[in-house]
Image (cartoon, rainbow, N blue to C red):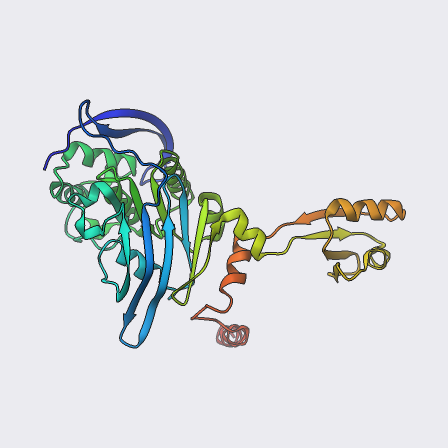
Length: 361
């Protein structure tokens, strides 16, 4: 099958190559040639899961999960280890068969798409590559299944910073280089939907920033991006919407700001040599005040402005008044506190530290 395309746009974006050198790259985005049918991304849900369930024997890995992923957004897919994220992603692209329920991409099961590389770009396991094959030949072989030629292969190699290692065997790649190759494979068909499982794993800071800018740009074009990660700080910068799984079930499905506000508590830190007077002044049934040390209070239930005005009216000196807002990490921890399958206990950490100390002596 051949695809009739022309370059419809070019943009310059920051990136870093496999050696870590920062520079600019010209991205080429492809679209149909004049007279060819065009695809409009639209705003309807692209990925739709309905009561999706997967059991392995007596263990239920995914338990009646329902959600939608919309175009124009980066949707974060979060959850503790063993929550069912990877299994769900595998079912979306037909690598695992659901025990119950259904999931579609652009209204069809993945297996029913005639040219899936042009519909969905997938990175689930960066190591799932023939170790004796070069990066260039790996991408060329993938492209051959969809009539994608060497020109596009060279473009995604350049895009992902693999120019200098494109002809080297993948078996010698570092973890970060393997991730870049996986992203190149996902972008090969210029798909309207991207599903990326831990794409920044092993990347250096420049690489992490590059992935963030890439997925944000693709979403701004109206494409659909489903992205998993355990890096909450990075997800807070990248995602527009968050879906959280825990023990195979959906714990939350909301925009990032809404999730943070509903799952965390805002407070005010006040530092004053008259901390005791502030506490007595502000104490009420609706206000919770915690003494951090002799001069520092953490106040829940009042805004920083209200605390400052009350202190000023009473002639109380303030050395610091800081509003403290919850983070995505705080919200995630609060949501998944009862869903963590593999938990390390502080006593175990203390025992390990003691053992290490004894060994060193």
